[in-house]
Amino acid sequence: NLSYVTNVRAHVEKIREAMQRNAGILFVLAAGNVNRPLGSDGLEPDRFLPAMHSPNVLVVANAKADGSRFSESFGGSGYGQPYVDVAMRGVGLPVATVTMGYGNSRGTSSAAPNAAAAAARCFLLNPSLSAAEVKEILIATSEVSSYWDGLVNANGLINEAAAMHEAMNRRSN
Image (cartoon, rainbow, N blue to C red; front, side, top):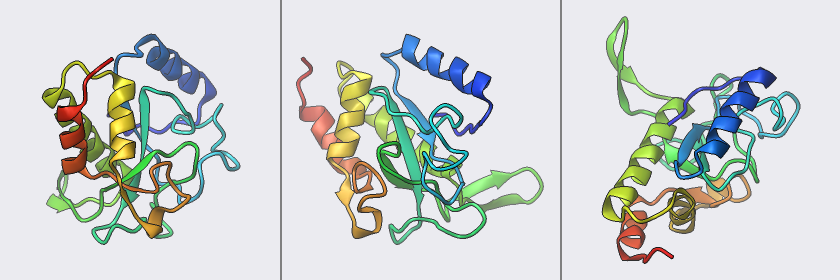
């Protein structure tokens, strides 16, 4: 899970090179709390880490409890095809905070680890799967929602139960 966003070209290049060298690892990236489409001004692929499309990278948008995109003016989820693959709930989940003890999550940095956990469960159920296969499973088994139509490649949210079922029954090539 990478809930790390940078727009420094040198950092983006180094991280992407590491991801390419490690094609067997599924990297789960937060789409960022930018409240606009990835690929737009300032969020171009050469400048914004989540604006990439790779078989071993899953980019995750942030959904509210009702399944819709978190779109508040501050911290609204990034979105946009072909860069963002799936949505996952990241709003209203309990989190530990440094100053207040506990609070509620609201950013893509909460949605991405939830997606990473779903991916990890798929790998646990079928260790022979490749990173690209787990990404494919998470996208293919997502629950399609009009909230996400055209905003993410899966057109919906990760359906963890369906993904685990598919992972368990899939035979690796």
